[in-house]
Amino acid sequence: MITNIKNIKIFPNGELPNDDYHGEAFADHVSGSQLCVIHNDCPAVLKYGENKESAALHFGIASHAAMLEPEMFDELFVRKIAKEDNDKYLTSDAAIKSFLKSAGVTGYSTKAWPELVIMALKCDANVKIFQLESILQEYDSIGKTLVRGEDYDQILIMRSTLFNDKSNAELFKDAQFEMSIVCEIEIDNIWHKIKIRPDIITRNCEVPDYKTTRDMCPEKFGNQAHNAGYWLKQAFVGDVLAAAYNQSFKMGLLAQGKSSPFITQLYWMTEQQLQIGREQYQFALKQHKICVDNDSWPAYFGGAVELVTPIYLAKRYGFESDEIEIKFEE
View 1 (cartoon, rainbow, N blue to C red):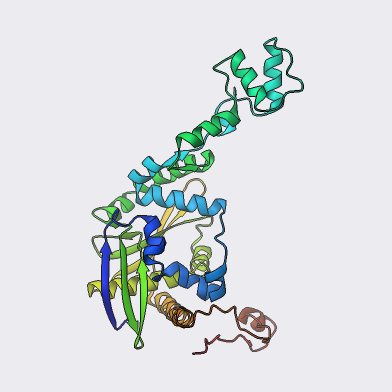
View 2 (tube, rainbow, N blue to C red):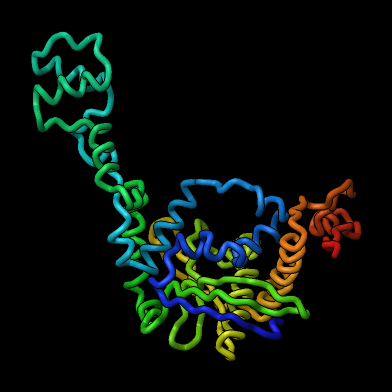
């Protein structure tokens, strides 16, 4: 457990922008998500791995903002136009040529974009050319985040479903959203610089982390919660909050399905789950400290080892598992 805490800086919502939280100002403070990378992969992945841009990641960022910081979402996230929005959109060179032909224009057959666009606009200033409309929207949305139209529409429905649920409305009443804590904590006589940013802290000292999921089945989501590092991160956040405020917090996960009817389910975490998460984050913290002190970010083992047989396979075939606990040499 955390035995001491110092240099605490608490930032209410809006006082520490997301870019600053993740940027250079607190780059030497490790977060729960970074500890998950170390635990689930290795230090080398944290230090040298590429930030993977994916549709799922963009959806997660946008939906997270929509649910927890709706005013900011409405101001800084913009629905990206889609071809399906308007059946009058000209979506290809061939479509533009067909439009010019129907208008009686000649001399377009050997032309390419953007000459075709100029010819079409001269013919009809109100013509809707999808690629041009997209470029203009990007220019008008500088400093904002464009969200794929289908995703944006889905997020708004999810937000409505979330907030129209009376139990969620009660949970959010007078809650704090997206506050940040930056500090140093002591575990086993070792000090670590850390940072946390809990999604929600309710007036009753409950901390449900908002998560979207494709599978709301309790058993499957429970498995996802462990594999995705939610146990680790929530144990980490809960222990830091307890040390900072000298009181206990109830940790949980507020899950919402990503497909209709976009149902929500609040899960409170058990002490067993939090203890497993606690062991995971403390192990990862020790690894991180050694890596920082030695400026060395190794891969999994640093040498040849025996391939591990997963426990479930060993049991299936009647063997004792040779699964091993990886210790980080000090």
